[in-house]
Amino acid sequence: MLILEVAVLKILPDVYQLTIRGANIILIAEQELTIIDTSFRGSLPGIDSFISHLGRSVSEVSLIIITHNHLDHVGGLPELEMITSAKVAVHKADLAETEEQLPYPGFVRKILHVPPITLFRPLVYARPSEVSIQLEGGEVLSPLGGLEVIHTPGHTPGSISLFSAREKLLIVGDTLNNRRSNLRLPPKLISSDLSQAIASLKRLAQLDFDTLCFGHGRPIIGGASARVRELLEKQGDKLT
Image (cartoon, rainbow, N blue to C red; front, side, top):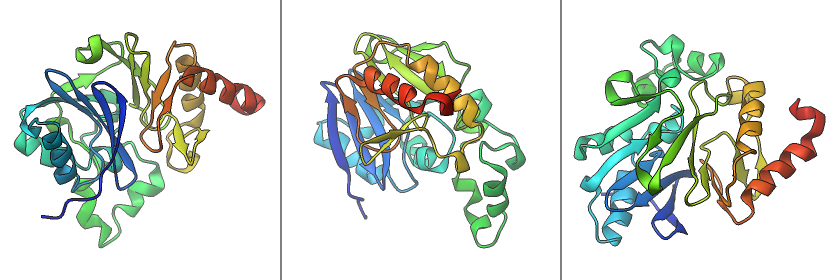
């Protein structure tokens, strides 16, 4: 069985970032195991290998939270659902009964109907039937002494961020990117509404957090909220 290379960073005593094929997974290893995002399909062996390294079993995962319903964040979900009894939490605005309502820009939905790509359509999003908790924003989940769900639309209609006040930790999915240590907004080409993303970022900038984790790129550990405010200030009129 092929095990993809996994880059691991320890964020906090019980929080790890696993990077597989350029997409980040956040593992919270408390008494119960929580996974935030699942990277691409085929990521299960890497996740399983690292959890085993901690002396735990992937079958212990009790909660899977998806920051947004794109293939590089939900691709590994079906495999995890097969071997765990975890509850799966996704914002309801990112769930669709038909492919025309998927949280992808129109040109991406058209590409999904072009052979042979059409064969992979079932792998690029989570369906309502696969989700046990449809989030609205404002919920407080149990990990890290209370993990607040913040609805941060823009990259997708149902994008969420997760905030632990106790740990001063903010997990933003693709609401922000930190590629090559360059903090930036999500790509306009594959975002549903960049003006919404900007408004979401302004709300996040009001929180008190030291550590910031992304869907792609290295985390910012220390002074993270100041970095976000600096980004807003530098952009100036571009973010109005």
